[in-house]
Amino acid sequence: MKAILIREHGDATHLEFADVDEPRPAAGQVKVKVEAAGVNFIDTYHRTGLYEVDLPFVLGQEGAGSVVELGSGVTGVAVGDRVAWAAGRGSYGELAVVDADRLVVVPPNVDTSIAAALLLQGLTAHYLATDTYPLSSGDTCLIHAGAGGVGLLLTQIAKIIGATVVTTVGSDSKVVLSERAGADQVINYANSDFALEATSALGDRPFDVIYDGVGKATFSKGLKLLKRRGMMVTFGNASGPVPEISPLILARMGSIFLTRPRLGDYIATNQELGKRAADLFRWISEEKLAVRIGATFDLWDAAKAHRALEGRETTGKVLLKP
Ligand code: NDP
Image (cartoon, rainbow, N blue to C red; front, top):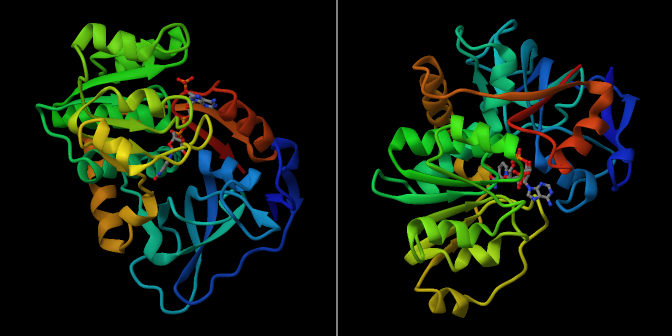
């Protein structure tokens, strides 16, 4: 079968559209015909080696499709079921094998591609807003990269909860998308200083929480915008990893909290995964949550998808179709 393989770490030229052996489901696993694979920043970290993987490696953590074979001992899913996953391996392929307890069955009213587009970034937005810092209606939050995959979903979830939402985005066309997602104030940080803009609109240190998936470029400035005992949630490295800091800085900044969460720790059990996914699917059916598929590429064109994501050209979700 065809898949996107890396044999060594490097830039997008290292993505190879290769013939690989069909994966076989072991006990507790399911083989799925992939209809759509989600492209995520973590795939670029696996490609570059920022996050370690054993080589050669078929990329892709997220996808959706239909079950074609069950490994022994699998219950709860059947051949033909439409399923989606956010913590799998080898999703950039025609077929993928996924642990059955990492699967979510896609409800009949949700398109398979929407499920592929929703799951990883939606589960992330869900745990950030409901558990890492559980937002409430009186809170004011800052969400960086508000027109990105996580950003658009997190903005909508924060508004479902009733928080005041300020976002940053890198272009005027992204301003429009972030406003449509419900942001109360959108700052184009490509042509202005987001700290100055936020404080001139809301006063000094306006934020209860900052959700920062951009990392290196925004982290330090953000610390100065948090209320006393506010929380910095640094959850990604889109502009590069955040440098190490001394805990004393947290004291100096007003006893602020710092956390660096990972999706895997917030969907650690099948029950937790199912509960978060059920909320997301319910919000979709209630039309409170919209999933934006910003771009779809053929599987063989995965390098183009990576370049677009890393080049800040994408909005919402990027999908690959085998
Ligand atoms: P996005 O769709 O948000 O894309 C990243 C965005 O970051 C870009 O579109 C761009 O938006 C912004 N950005 C700012 N500076 C840069 C830069 N130098 N290079 C590239 N992009 C930049 O991606 P995702 O929604 O998939 O992910 C957002 C972040 O969340 C990533 O860092 C990712 O690793 C992280 N993440 C973390 C998870 C976790 O559990 N910890 C799970 C899922 C994602 P703009 O042009 O508007 O600035």
